[in-house]
Image (cartoon, rainbow, N blue to C red; front, side):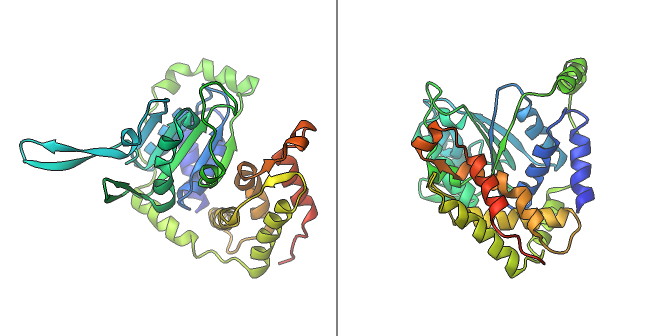
Length: 308
């Protein structure tokens, strides 16, 4: 329900200035088993927002700072021998949480980056042949340094595709930054009680899947994706996962707006968040200033919107 999301946003906003659209997308990701790739400058409140969001749902929060020498076991966990029990036991890594913030994901080498693939897709991890189910709900928020920054390993299209949504974070506006420095002592002391329980989130996840999606809207989703794939400027277009997440996200958006069915407007709202990171522009067009955002806007203005 919309009121549930608004309660979370209102409570977190007592200690976070701005970022309401991000929190809305986080809620959508939470109830669709999705994950978000964040991109933007340091120090703009990404970790603070994620931590308080986790507290608001009564969930466990973990932050993982990626560095070049980090190993997969540092994330997933490892086995150790317990002398008192005379047997091997598993020590869970920081990925065993409800909300996991991965800071500077592209600073880690590819082998370590790949440690997240199974977790994000299957909601489980495999260590030394043993499979462990992750807590539910489970959501990864990952930040990355600007592409081309020294000491980074670019994410592959396969890795990028695992992120359901993409959200660009910018510097705060003048009034927002003034409010931040004026209330900094209160903001840094933030700790909130849960607004909802993890069980309630699970019920919402189940209800979201019941939201009706017409064949016309499904066709509209696929037409948008196919339009982008067909553009001359695009060397790598959205995979079928883009269509899936446009559908899942639109269902969640309709549900939290207390609407009984998905409309093309829901799809349009989520298009930027779902499609941008799944588009790669050919180098000759990049030189001319063409960006993924231009292609998405072109698709939204060109593809016929069905009447429902």
